[in-house]
Image 1: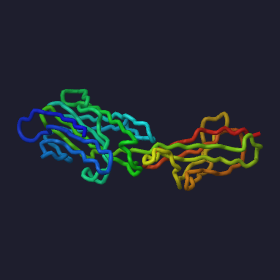
Image 2: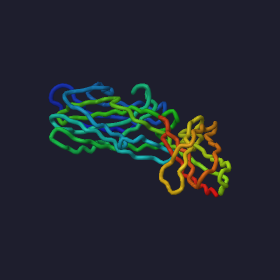
Image 3: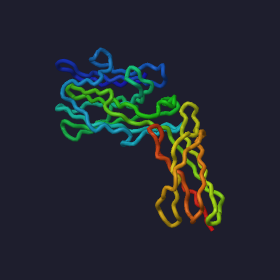
Image 4: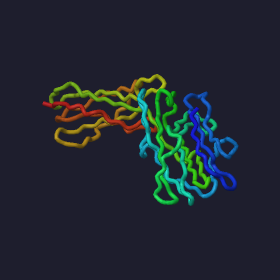
Length: 276
């Protein structure tokens, strides 16, 4: 269990005395909570005093995309305001119907956030989170929308804690190939463009075909910089693509996938075809 604690002096009633979050990496892992003035339970959507949170940013606003083996460290941040100033902040991501019924958790590496004051009352606080697909993403159903916990602690003990301040996507890395043949080819003859759309399988640590997905076949004429969509082709049960077109001029052929909630957009490298 990884514990982070922030202790604040309390003068008066309730105040957040600590944030404590264990790592959850399997379905039977213990669920995170907050060791606080709230009976040792996570103070879901709790506000004590006049601390406020804004501008919560996860991974620079970009989706978190993981392959099969390499871990990735991302930066998370929030801006918080309290009349007394900001002492500390906390951000994590969790997956599931509720905090008490979660099946995935991504927690910060640091025990204390790095908070930079922009005024006497407002600070921007940063943390990092390392996501390891072989530890944290143990099943493919974890791909998609995650909830973001955001919390801030004022120097006077006031606090704001939101279990689901916003959402953010965690996705399975995708790959796409394209090959045009035969080459070279006589103008007016039929060519075949094959390819494959695959994505990370977190359960097997391999890449597997992404079936039944619409993928655009695109062409860029030699000497130009823009691809034009020629047609849309659906991947088969193993993620493979194949279609035919008529050769008209020299240029580059590629497939382009728009992406889904669980899988990012990707375009194949253009395959040059010499038309004679």
